[in-house]
Image (cartoon, rainbow, N blue to C red):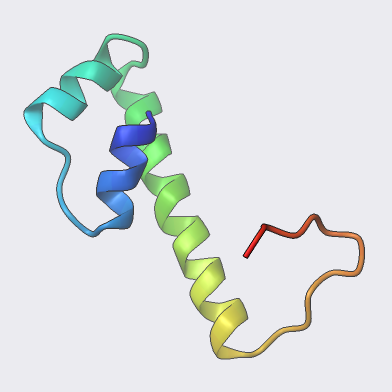
Length: 64
């Protein structure tokens, strides 16, 4: 799943090998949901960054 998410993050299609690897663990509907969740996360991130929304007080921070 990590390789597939990385591919989607870098705005490229899933290779046949990446899709095949996902298919070994997930059905077609689950793979579609993984892709949709990646897109939704990116959309939320774009909006939060573009609107300069403040960080949530109790949210975990990623190391810089």
